[in-house]
Image 1 (cartoon, one colour):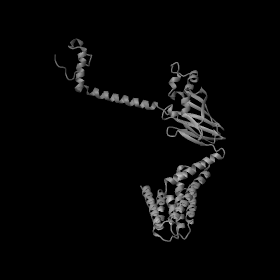
Image 2: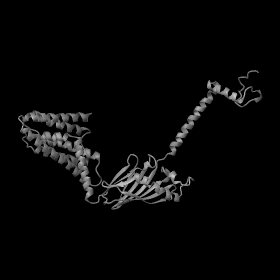
Image 3: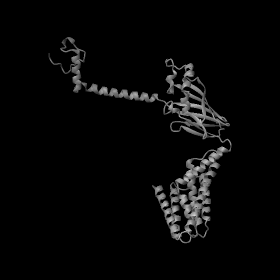
Image 4: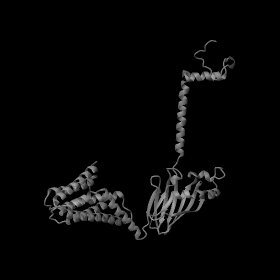
Amino acid sequence: MPAPSPLTPLPRWGEGNRSLSTFSRDEEHRHHAWQFSIGAPTHKGWRLSGTLSLSTWLALFAAVSASAHTTGISYADIDIGERQVDVRLQLNVRELRFAAELDENHDEQITPEELQSGFRRFVPDLLKQYRIGTDLEEGQGLLGSVSSRRVPGEVECRLSYTFQRPLNELWVKATLHQLTDSGHWHLAQVRYDGKEEQLTFNLENPEARIELWRGWSSYYKLGLRFLKLAWRNLLASPEMAGFLAGLVLVRNASDGTFSAPLMFLLSQLIAFAVGTRFGTVLPPGFAGAAMALSVVYVAAENLLLKEITHRGWIAGFFGLIYGFAFAEILQAAGLPSKGTLTALVCYQLGIALVAVALVASAFILTAGFKRLPRPRQAVVVASLAFMALGLFQFVRKLS
């Protein structure tokens, strides 16, 4: 049989004159498979088009999957009474993970009857992810009613949370992303005493706090919180302890023993008030380094000078730096929209209490040094310790 002309196209598999075929259909398939496996030139185009087609389908599938996912959003109206909190919660049933279990007859539709009978089974899960409480107790949640809304696929739940004590403050923790998806957002409108607040909950911010300002207890708790905040800040930055101790731990001071600490507290208070009202005037990072160097400075004076006549002015100068630094720390922590004056006063009260305790301890330490055979050496050792503390803090803050 003559060979086909190069211009004559070869018959494709399954085509041509079957009577001239000398091998079966399976043999023909194996023949073409052998040609593909060895990479015959006639099939390179088929391999390339197949790869491109597969890549196109995978990209299309990923795009459809990404566009099909939308962030779920739920809404709530929260009314806070004296000892009870009522919540009107709106959810999309189709976004809930237990939505398929509400379809009792498996017809891919959830009727109002199925919603009424099936939704209550999952109320414990809902109340576990939607919690309301105070610092003293957590509210006992209860489902009042559940009904379908006019918007297709949405349900409205009436929840109530009861408390044994009167409500002066409240926290709300909404982790509905545990019931839907990680991108779920929850928006709440809170009403109490003729006032309204808007809250937003998501995966990064699942909890919010509400100060109701009912009676003196709210101000007491706010003041106590900022009092403890001042103590925590002073423990994290021990420079003030070393500075005040260095002011008192000196052999001879012609300007008085109490004048230096008093000048420090007064100037610190003035700078703190200016910093919280108008903002700090110090460059970034300057206050931390200056606080550390203040400890080094007073320790060096105690080591090198026999008579100190300017200790009060030094205390007043560094007190300004400390005051601006405390104002920066408090602004970074955030001031409440209500009870701001209470927060400021209690924060300064915390600083003053610590300062008085430090100065009293330094006086006791100084009196103990005087009973030693060589009091000067004890002062030198203590000053060296304070200087090492200041240098360590300085290097740490610069790094």
